[in-house]
Length: 578
Image (cartoon, rainbow, N blue to C red):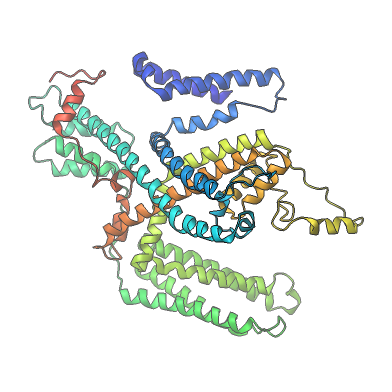
């Protein structure tokens, strides 16, 4: 109820600020009002029924509040909505019409005319081959669908989505430029030169704005460059906001450094990993009693002492500030300290023969080997292609937050629908106790068909609660044998349950995963083109140019000054005396 009151206050504030005329034009605000009203009514019904009802409609509308407060998620959702007809047309022609024409249902068959071909396009297709009329059709369909047309579908999805996203970004850029031009016009009012603004006025306004220190330094830098003129024109004013779009580029202090030392450090780390792999291969065919871990312990100790010496030398040469200004040094330092702790625990435990049961030597050696192999990842920033891949993965967290948010919304909606439809549909068998287990219970597992829900013991994967529903939907999206869930729920409920699972598979595996892969490729190709002329040390400087707007900057046409002035004159809430 408290959240609904906060949303109501937010809606009232927005409605008051934009006015009634603009409120009627905004579909999102109208939907905001409808959702809050329905949620209020449903909450009052729940209170009147002492929260004993099973169906709560307001749960279905909760993701709307997440979408409504994110402009990028709104644009993404609009682009996906425009892309859906192309996907539906493609899937309807290929996955339904073509198989039904080539494989009609036999006369007198009691089986319903269900289409197994969506399952045949997944990786675990062997279980679906007997369902079809013959391998002469199954394997050509599988090869054509999986390796040709499904990849073609990825290209179709992204091509359509990219076009709509480009249009959306174009609109966003125009609005941004219009806002910057309006701010410039407001600040230039009352001056003898209306085409310029006073730098002192700009600094006074920016000092009252809550900005990060980096952005304030960028404004001061512009002020220093224009201090001889004391004014800024429109292009210089727009350049300030271009600086505010960029991320922070961390400037490292000048340090004594040579590339040969980096090569030596990486070579030592590689030699340590090779030694571990060699000893593990030699001990793989020996029993536990025959294995001698003395050489591995000695080799690891020598390498760890070298790592400690390397860290100490860098701390002495760089100083604390210089050492911790590089993320690679922080990574090495943390892992070196973590490697020292198991070594100290090893010598403190196994120097006394009576204390061997405190910690397992095998587990301790596994921990040390794992940390050493993990430390070998330090070579990633020193290899251009690997650094490019790693930076692409890091940028995905920043650039794909809107897509991940919509995926969370879709997960939530399908989970709520699944709980409404299938809660309690499948009851797991009673767990027999260890004392009274009979041969009948033992042989019942063998009577189940191979690959079925019962034989695979998928009993925890159900819709009895929200967490289990999320796990089941994730399994359907990722696991190859997702047809086992369809077959089980169609037996325990009705054949119409297949519509739910196939809809989720089309939404998640076909559309969303393909779109996600296509966006990863777009981000990687953009960074690859930008890094072709960069060295390894310059890779960090291109990371600030990977926002969604900057990725499509070359395809976006900037609005002209005449277009901006014309739109400002037609703006209903801005009245300026030109």
